[in-house]
Amino acid sequence: MSRLKHNTPPSANRPTPDPLTESSASPPTGPSQRRYDAPGDEPLAIAVNLTLQETFRFDRGLSKRLRQREVNAKEAFTLRDGAGVYFRASLKEYDAKGGIALPYERMDRSPEATIDITLACAVLARHRMHLVVQKATELGVRRIVPLLTDCSVPPENVEQEQAHAWPSHILRATKQCRRSSLPHLLAPTTLDAFLTSPLYAATDLRLFLDDRVDPLPTPADKPKRVILLVGPEGGFSDAEREKLSRHARPWVLGGRVLRAETAVLVGLTAVHMRWGDFT
Image 1 (cartoon, helix red, strand yellow):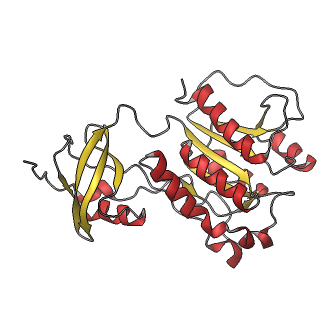
Image 2 (cartoon, rainbow, N blue to C red):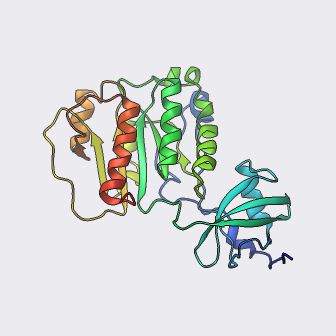
Image 3 (tube, rainbow, N blue to C red):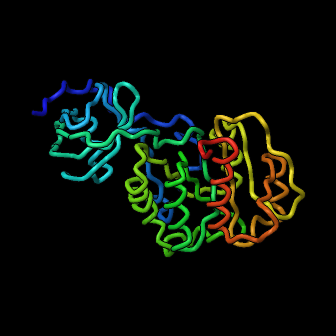
């Protein structure tokens, strides 16, 4: 017979704000950008140790976070227990005050990336940008920064490219890949604003993809935080490349010309292979 465990302390499931993104990019400049950011969330957690097939109760804090993630009764979610072990759990019932869930799978490996990655990608056309936010989420990025560059989708056209759908694509991808955290989607911002942001200044390694330079050796030391900047179709403009060269390290991904969305996937994979958890 299953037994109910004690409630989680109320403070255990308050979303922890990301200090690097509270003021990291320029704020929205008008209605066309106002709805396109979405706060991230740390891994779902409970303070008690979980046992397979034994139900547990959770508090209103976790209940609120599950509701924000659109997890419904009888659906599954990933959370970390008091011993730091990740489980898949089935949501049995919940309301505004809390609920009950059943852990049914103990995960052998953490679903969270071992390196803090921010993807700063030029805003692409509709379905291509949808693909970028989906796959970046699956590849474990912590933040996604849509960049307004010389050759990206211009600010006045962001609305018609269905930017309002970016958060929902991130949410679905989070569920699909079974990660427990939710990446932070920042509001679209200019390249200049991003290069002078607190987030940019607080990052150990900054890389921008550029196929028009000679390859440089990548640092041997493992960074804690990485920013990967990817330009639009055709790459960053000459002026942007010159500016980026003063603030970041150019990175060459072979001799082939890649579509922007392909470059995102290859670049993130290369980051994980070099410094992350791809072994």
